[in-house]
Length: 307
Image (cartoon, rainbow, N blue to C red; front, side, top):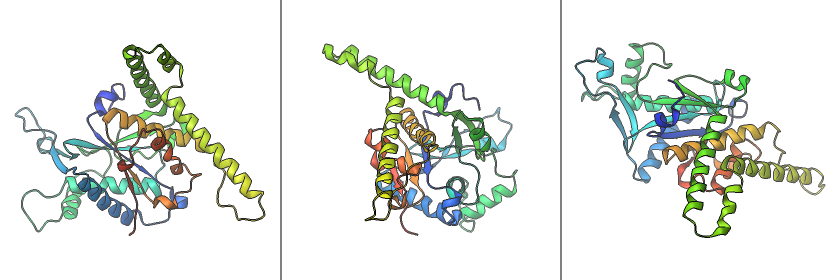
């Protein structure tokens, strides 16, 4: 699918972003974790009064030559199809990429749950039967979509997990979108304001610049605290200085969530480990940036809890 008109193509979806450590820091069984998180996801939506449902996306047509398309469905939240937003993590047997794919497949199982009244066929059996009759799981499923967001770096682009991906976007595209939306909001504010002092609003940093500044500040604070602890003989160091590469990945993370939250008006974000176990110097540990700037709401997060 072309990314040229990505905003109009994606604005009617409900985006899901999944964050957590990679395989080197998370050896847990991704199948167990993803199924547990899928149940938490459903309970989270139910508690908010949001309804997960199967939605027909291709009504019967005399001109259609595909029985599959006649019966195509997707999984939707309050009528908005689900969209998985991935952030360029490479494929892995464990870690966030494997867990993300696992939750994606849980939703596909839900999508293909038998609807013919045959109670002897479980949702898992119906899904397995669907797989057996088709090509290997890749990009061929109607309905549920995965969009890939990467840095503009060729290596990051090449190494990303592309299972089930139907569209790719770059960080620069999302930053441009946020800048444009920010400029529109500024223009509207200053045109409606009768206070001449409000003219300075147009010269303040753009939203992407504000996100980057917040990430820089957080990195500087963590680095200073790590240094302070390392030079203190009275206590064991509990903070590490972030790697220099952390900034670009934290920017990708926070810009991606903010852009899709802005575009779609809502988002669900899943953490694959307990919040108290997220190292503040890790990429996932920069999640407070979006919260502090008011770009993401607290109740849009699902935090892993228990087994």
